[in-house]
Length: 393
Image (cartoon, rainbow, N blue to C red; front, side, top):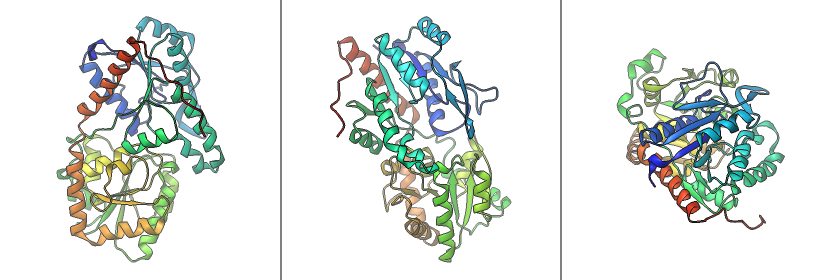
């Protein structure tokens, strides 16, 4: 069996209506699969004006706007029309990228048809409640996730650190790696544009601390802004350049009145904006990989990040950047101060990060997932089933 024998039904909670690292990775995957001759059909919520065009055939799944976060959609299940479409398409493997209602229903459908299912893990959903004063829900959400992933033939994580966490949480016996790649045509140190910086009021000799991502509280915006206050109190000269947009932008702009906000960027504009900073500060603990971390490293920038899944697999503490205990404001400020005041250290960490990023090509990354699909199909053909896991202590 080879890639051209694959017929993949891919289910996503957000394939292209909001631009983020997870759904851009899924679109890149579909493009790679189609180039290898595989058949792919994507089932996901749709809107009239998505953030970017979908790669491949996208079939709309029923959904409604999430209360309080209308930019996101909440899927309502797998209606009869989608089941008929699946029977017509006749997939031989399911890929589930979100443990939402659509994902749960699709998983049940695949089990009734005795078809294998692989799930990819893109974010740490169990950590989200803590940003809304609902931390007591984390064990409940973790239990729901465990039930979902244990019913899959295999799950794939974007980093070694996330894969180890999933094993410790006893989510599955079969945990593989589907990491992320970086587009070196977009993210490279030579994309740095000092004239563009000057147009924003950032002088050549000023050190710009970058933030890249959707402006939502789950990205650690409170920790970021508190750290900048601490850095200012220490008397360390710096500027802040924020790349991205989102529902928390107004709050973030009021919180950081001296920062430069350039909004959502894409393609070459994104590469220019990121390369024109001097370091990336990523305090988030919700990512399973951290695409922005890898993109910054490809631009030869040191990264200051929280010790969390994803960052631990990319950032080598003291070599390509600094890893700091989550939420430790003083520690983050000291790490940023080190790179703000020591040009040689900043340059050395950036160069080491660029060398690391060279290992992450998209085709190699996506082929590893293709290999997982084929392995699962071979196991099923040999009579393999999903093993039962013991109880969780």
